[in-house]
Image (cartoon, rainbow over all chains, first blue to last red):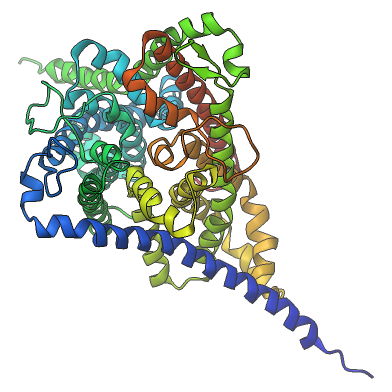
Length: 290
Length: 290
């Protein structure tokens, strides 16, 4: 009787499996490379101007002549905070309330289904299209302002907030609602005092992620906020600027302007990372588990 | 004895809250309708002037008021295609590594890293691509350079979606395959792949939609030259980038032409997104996931 050698065949099969595992590891490395390279460039090229001129980089105005080397992105920091903040004030309450309707009232009725479907459609609208839309609706009539940019960002945030908030409401167990009704609470009181507090950590973390995305957007702001070089702390009046718009405008300019673009990029990335990490922290610590 | 009417005011407040929530949900429909109406209305002049030539010719000349969009449509599709072919193998590799190979702590770290990669603003990738990556790889602004940057930007989305899809594979299927002596790779091809095929196709299409609508990063590295050629290393142009570059100082008919481009972009991305969402939801439902 001849022994069947099971190893020979098996070894080719396991080699193949290991080969594929190797390819997966290569893919993981490949995803790390751009992130590491971008972060390194930011620190290397942007760190200098931010640290050497600390805190001037955040308090000085943007030089009138882009050839002049040195700091100044203060107005852009203010503009980004104003536009993103105003967008948050508009999109978050509206989005959460909309999600409350979809999950607590609408459920599977036709209107709720249509809104849910259209919210999905709206997440797919390219940001440049949203920028043109706000230009036609707002900027053409009222001129440049941080608020115009905020409108565009709010339109981009709204469907994202609705989607994530509805998912969080879905996680609230039904017996909480029933217990509240049993105590004689109305529907709205149940939602405001029982359902929303239970879901709030998840909702906050979803909103922070939406804000982080919005803060980095450029295309929607391009035709709405303008390109001011001086401080403008008004939300509604006069042209403003933003970090992303400044990076875009200075990227193809002279080296002195490019240095400021790198500093602005470092600032913007730190801001978005901060928002993302706090979102993760909140989810990790307080949110209900699936 | 008087009877208390417990419904009185409470019921009014309850109803008001319900209508408020409904109104918030309806904002999505209003905004989308406004986008569709204002944009198509403003696109009409150029379509009246050019007719179908707008979509089938490539001459884009502002002084002579000749607007042919084919070059931009081609550039959009070509760069998106390059981006997808670079991003898909890497995304699938990482998603498989996270779900099938990585130990739990590493899994968490990788999900974190992908989250961070997803929130890096597109303008920062553009700046980095223009000033660091392209010179380092000896590339000029071209379809390919834009394709790489877009690939980096859509990899996190495709990865996290495919991870979610793959995770719905029943553990019993996988264990059965392993118990029959399958290697890891054989287990993946026999259980994970047939189970997740539909969802993975959807994830890729959502990435495709994102790549086509992405504006700012591509504007900095695509070359801004109308070009219909198969060579990936030639400079090109795409719909969102020409809007970003020219809309600021455009005359009325030129503006109308750019808005018509935005409408075209809108229709294409929405179509891709809808099909993708439908495919994902269908496959998720069939596989018993959420």
